[in-house]
Length: 396
Ligand SMILES: [Zn+2]
Image 1 (spheres, protein in one colour):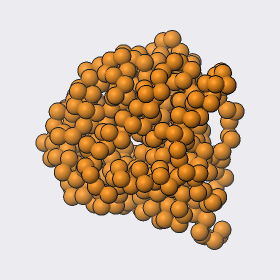
Image 2 (image 1 turned 135 degrees about the vertical axis):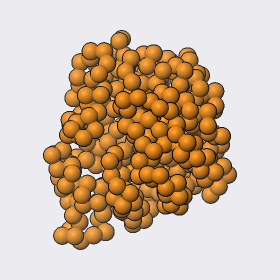
Image 3 (image 1 turned 30 degrees about the vertical axis):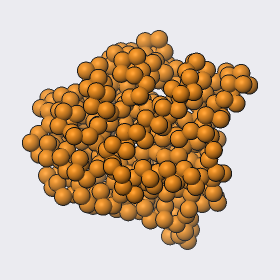
């Protein structure tokens, strides 16, 4: 059983004087912003769900556990301060032992990304509740101490350009997961939105080799299908799909086809199921909710086995639908998600809206849907730990 968490009420950058804290925007609250999800469980099921969350290792493969500005028009100004506020109070209520937290933002320069990483590390160093996991031993120690561990990552490798040594620099600064490419084309490979998927480049193969040598988990969530398959083949270690769903359930390019899911699992890897608005929809549940995400979950378990499935909900403390609208011009993600079968847009994904509520609700839904304790323990954390032990090696 976990120790009671030692959260003392710290809020991000509270070590600064108010007039110096340039991130003092009106931020979305990380606690109680929306009505709670109604799972419709019996009292006995609710108790079982609570015991499973408290008694199991719980790891999110992909979330953004920081607070967005309440007014998304202020997003760029907020990010420009360099002080992006981690949602400490929300994490306290999340049931999470560890969360993969991707720093920077698509399109940012090397300098800006490193500044963001350093600022986050600085803020985390001011308190004792959230910690950084650079290996599985650190991750497990955090759990024992009732802390939440961040596993630091980047969604894409654009910032390394063609300088492989930057991968070493990132590792040295605590990065333990790297996306091979984000949506478009980079020096390593092709993303989901690239006009043509040329596969992993010669430099990309060397980058995969370097990540293997260092012990960095490689993520192919935003890679094109061919590039993703090439990475799985080239990598000596299992490869992660930290946040996606099954194209067999919802036919868009953002979802992974069976052949990628099977190749990933056969090489020992995992898929974390995504819940960003209007991604993991299904024909049975075209109004995006925890029910549609569970349709992807069942399909993946049937296809590749429960040992290879996890959850990477990809949520923020703040309005994710509005965020997609705000970045539509630069990243075009809302339009990208809409380029599939017709669906009914939602204001938010009920039950999977922010990092504070995802895992308690996932466990509630798994209990309600009749999954066994052994299956639930695997998919909410044990699978991720097993794979990280292989990728990261026995360090720290
Ligand atoms: Zn992503």
